Image (tube, rainbow, N blue to C red; front, side, top):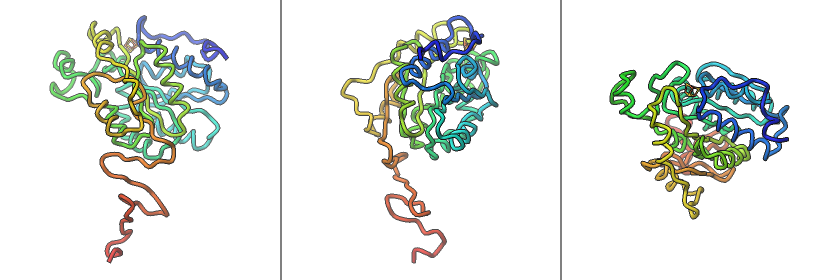
Length: 281
Ligand code: SF4
């Protein structure tokens, strides 16, 4: 199937120039590359401009409730494991009201791709600051605590133990396409941070400023290096590419401890914790 065959008959109502158009295009290209049958594809979203995206695809689609796309997608994948399940949404939906679901979905490691189209603003409700808005944006607009630091989504998902973490830009279609392809092929929870622009409510120079801050990861970058991925996530500049990819079945080494689950006991660094007080004596 060609990319256009993954489009529904609905015309997007996004503003002309919105970064979400690029994401729709790159995603349909990746689906075409992987020959995903539309009848085996389900796109789930919450609420927001980018959460309209499922309606523009030829797939099963559920534009659900604010911040709740991940648990809905998890339930769907568990009930219908043969489906390719993709969640799309914005930074407000995913990192504000929906944030509590993110680390728990990562812990469950169900095979879902989660793409957050991050434009640092609530677009649908006309321009409030989101958890990823810069401090200067908040000061200018006065729509949030003036000194609230922006959240670092990539650092957050790495610390939660995600096995696949990529970052891309809505204006770089070949890159976007390849990141979606790699995420959809990963046999566990895959997170894609998509930098996108909001041409209507962000400051006019925002999209260009973000684009100028992007670098492709160097060719010798090793995506299995967890410490290196954390460095890349902290970088002032946005590193684009597969920041981290853990081989399936390898235990996560997140937040400095190595947690695993075996025989009904949680263990830390291979040492079982007592299930009841005094049992270790
Ligand atoms: Fe895109 Fe912003 Fe328009 Fe929403 S308000 S469709 S995010 S440009």
